[in-house]
Length: 415
Length: 134
Image 1: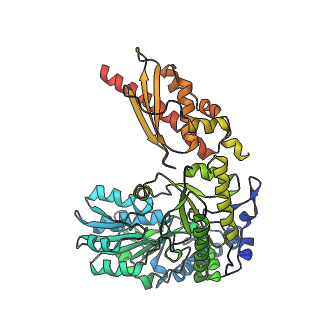
Image 2: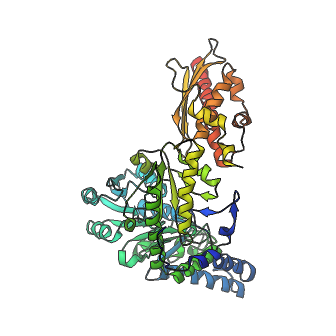
Image 3: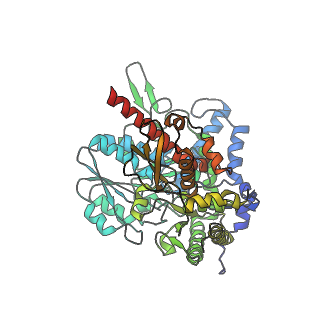
């Protein structure tokens, strides 16, 4: 193994994650599925427990101390998240259940209000189903046309094709900042500038970028950015929609009910101001507070350091796995152009069997199509195995993966 | 559970030398389904007895993990000559017993894909017969 640089104290980080201390099937847990959902550090668990133990009451309702405390903590979480992604104000941050719900919100509230028959939406061949199916449903319902930016053989977006596909009918351009399968990092700013010049708005799926690298919505100038809390050390059930204020204000609400209104009479209803207009019902405020703690944790490490740590691990994993005979790696070969996620196949071993055999060694990887079936059709495979990394991942775990693949080959009598 | 338990000899044998593998040119019906979780795919062709009450022959094709393919191979081997009414009522435990090793919940779905395809195929064929005679 090469000498690895330490961008932060990984051992200290690991001590903050109680779940990583356990053994699985008699072996130390090697958790390589953070792209699906990350583990949670003690400060996140403690922040949420503190609310439930000491300061729990519904937000935006009571005038008593407990409700005021919970509301203040909820508002503070929103402010932390706004700062984390460089949003100009807290009003730009809408809490949703996850990135999927944020994308559905946009498909329902934005697209159904502003798109007309014959309009075009430009997406990419590598999208997660969450940034695919809502547009497909919309297209069928409203006769809107979907177009897909193809990939180069290396797994990057084909930007020449993008130029050709962008027309005056294009109303929305949307793409994953980082692919959850190929790891492809797409530089958003040039695409966004071109889309704006053509009169389209841009939605960036930041599910795999916001947890792993510095993201600044004003620098890239996206109109909307979505991401999930549970992939970035936060709890499940909380996600974020960032939106430019003028767009959020122009959009009709998505879900309706309490908290999202300013007045309700028997024959009249007026919407609350943004962002509350989009947050009907009691919000997942304890989870939002947990996500605020997660953002604090990541900020303390520094997102540049997080990215550098993962880029180094990715470079090592690309090298180490390519030494294992029969392994085929998908996506860009340059570790600077990919996030900490590696999809691969092993000759003559179905990914499911590989995942089961690795599990016997305590190694957790994902197997399947990773909610990106159209991409797998393009790759010409039914399923891939996927290993993904985060702040707590160590190079020794990549060694364990490589050795685990060799064990699996022996168990299935493949040399 | 040791690794050798999950990929025991008889399972690997059915995977490497699947019984009733392929397609039937003279099938009475065919059905295919995928497991959305992993993309495993199984198609089963069934040839019925003259009185259309029993499975005279069957063949499966598709691709997927060892568990899904071996389980389908074992299933078809075990139901040759059975009444389709009985196959339709077959307890999933039948397939899990043939596999004979404990499976995790997600792998159970792999193991039962073939049974699901066979049962649904029978159900749809019966429905079609009812519509024809109606």
